[in-house]
Amino acid sequence: MPTRSVDARQDKRDGGGAIPFLLWVVLALIVLSGIAWIMDSPRRLGIVLLQEHYLAFVAGLSTAAGLMMHPLAHRLRWLDVLAGVAAIAAWLWMGWHFRDWMLDMANRGPEKWVPGVIALALMVEALRRCCGNAIAILVAIITAYGFLGHLLPGAAEAAHTRPTRLVLYLYADSNGVPGLVLNVAASVVLGFIVFGAALRAMGGAEVFTNGALRLMGQYRGGPAKVAILSSGLFGTVSGSTVANVMSSGVVTIPLMKRSGFPARYAAGIEAVASNGGQIAPPVMGATAFLIAEFLQVSYVEVVKAALVPAIIYYLVLFLQVDAYAQRHGLRGLRREELPRLGATLRRGWVFLLPIALLVWLLFWQNWPPGRAALAAALACIPAGVFCTRTLPGLRFWLDALADAGRTLVPILLISAAAGIVVGVVNITGIGFTLTMELGRIGAVYGVLPLLMVSALAAIVLGMGMPTAAVYVVLSVLLAPALVRAGVEPMAAHLFILYFGLLSMITPPVAIATYAAASLANADFWNAGTTGLRLAIAAYLLPFAFCINPALLLIGAPLGIVAAVIAAVAAGYLLSLALTDPWPVRQIVLFAIAIGVTGLGFVFATDSLLTPFLSIGACLLVRFVPGFITPYNQGEGTS
Image: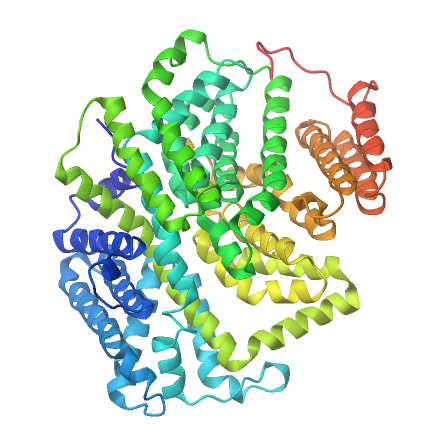
């Protein structure tokens, strides 16, 4: 039988029973309404609906679901139901009157702003319950700034806005909650969440894991390489790092521990590999489409730019795992422990067809991303039936919809909250001020300090936030300053995406590492520091492609080739440095990696000097005695 998602099974264990019927209906309604909107069903039925009508409906349902999913007290859940009904009513009130209000913007009577206060307040409370206090406090501070910012002195002073105007701007304007951010989340991201849920529910994640296990499991450190391959394949479409950890980690983490990897190392590998799926083409957890929307470029351009950094990310991780396994003599799994290749191919090859269909529709047929994702999700059904020879019943499909809705609710809420951030930034003028201040840092101290400040801000602001929402919030706050300082726009947006995602594996929050550590029974801090070392490429690559956009395939062919060779060589040297047991040699290898390839990368990108320097450094380190600690001889080869 196709399997329910790991998230759903975890929720049942935590919740102690079936999803309450009302919440189950609301979650399914979110997904069904999104599918209907993506497929343009209202127009086909002759119903005239504006984008704001749909977004108001989604905002109300998401708020109600968020309140009911995380009740304040189980014995008083009816209070959360009443609050959810009030939220739905407040948002539907805006949707019902939206056209009239747009023609009567000067009138800001209580019949407009009172429902607005209710809708926004309940939405922030639902956000707090679903996504944590940190992001809710951030949104509350930004909202308070919108009301009181005009009282602050100096550069922090905001333009004065009447409270009723600000409430209506955030509640009912396309620059506020029912705007671009929520629209992308409720259409494009929703489509890919449905695709990922369909793939999991029909058994596609299990097939990918088994295939990776058969391909890589027999080599040294095989289970760790399986984790990298399977997490990368599934992570690009899942849209959630934590969901990816919980889906593949339940299989790969025990295998890694059994083959000799310490628990902290197994947790770190799974967390870093799962996080990389969010920056790996073709889907990038649906963030590729957000970047394309913000930059007003084609989706193909985003995928092209993200390709080389993603390859280097996984290459460095793979090399570190291989070097660690070789140094410690960690063997692969015995052949009889692995799934049979013939059985895996016969059972699972059909799950490649939905992904192939998705790529074909996006690249060659130019379908809208959300609709292409839904078509791929639909293709998962016959693929799953072909594998299991069983057609699941109606309850299975409705539960699968509810599971997808459960994944969507935090994303929709934080995207709606991002609308508050965007609205306040626009109406107060703080966005321009922030850009000017960060630009001054770049002008006075240079681009590198500006990038370092932006990286730290991105990690802090991105803590605990879903992938798409991380990018959306940071693209509004940080990207303009980077572009103003001379950073290539594509590089600036990928920079903030990388560092926003790194909050998932950067202590003290590091929720992806926390999830992986819980599966591995590992100490969180040990797993977190191990993950930092394994993800070294992710911390350095954004600086590299901001300084030299050739890594994003932007520029002259010779410069692109030189930059790619330099980056790969640096990754190889770093992987050796971070797995060497002797601190002195680690420092020497790290210095060679940064010094030789870094200097060539920055100063000789348009000549053949960079490749020669980079390759020469690798050969020097690899073959000159004393640079590398002799390996233990484990079975198998890389």
